[in-house]
Length: 207
Image (cartoon, rainbow, N blue to C red; front, side):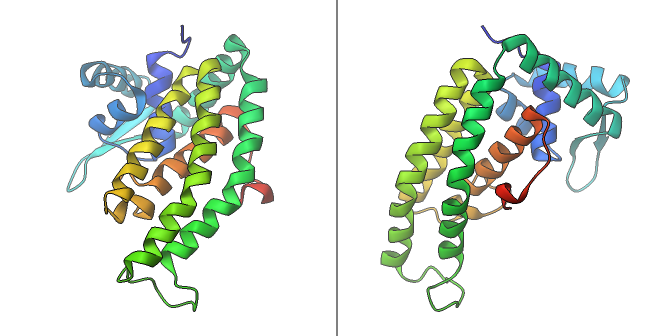
């Protein structure tokens, strides 16, 4: 059984997304929207989150919220004894980071350096096909990690959903920001490793 609490899941979703509406927090945390609303209300009372309203409304962590989030992650890692599993998965992920960056570059630029206008289906299909081995490995490593820390179980689903959209012809599913793209999930996972292990980004992390 997971020892990850609802408050941590909600704060963690905001840390990974930076800014999110309750529906997105629910999607990322696996909680239902009433539970998210209740957790956000309590966190707001404690000064850990703040709400922004306007054309785009959502929630984000306050500085105190970031501090509380880091403390809760450290407690979770100690309680679960999952640090070795997270460190192993993080090391495996970093070996995939550069190949994935190269795939993103190929998706955005043609071999001659001109922008990819996606008018050549064969070229795009070749990039999507080359994503296959990276996909298999990142799904495998997050799937293994989820056995030690269940909240990582959302990543195989997120990556698979984005890849299926790609294979169905939805080009936005590769690297379009804030669209549930493969790149979105990749960046969230990268930040998840950094936050969970309480480490700073290094040269090995790349982007």
